[in-house]
Amino acid sequence: MANGLITPKLVLQVAEAASDLEITHAEAMAITAGMFSDLTSAMMFGFVLWTMGMIGMAVGKTVERK
Image 1 (cartoon, rainbow, N blue to C red):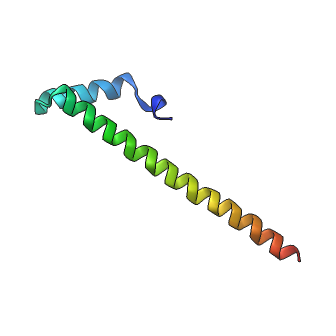
Image 2: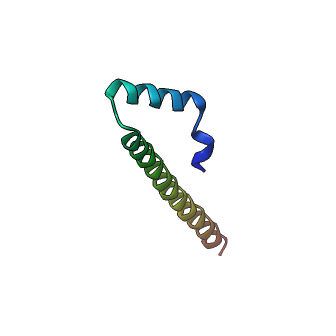
């Protein structure tokens, strides 16, 4: 999922920011990994909420019919 979000421009921006702050390669990788793990967990949380909403709507429609 996250692979599509890594653009050359983003990589350059991260590299420039890292060189400005004098961050080591390992630290830059840790920051990037942290960003993507947060994004993935946020997407999973959103998907769970969406699924619950779909189930709730289906149940609501079924109850209405009776």
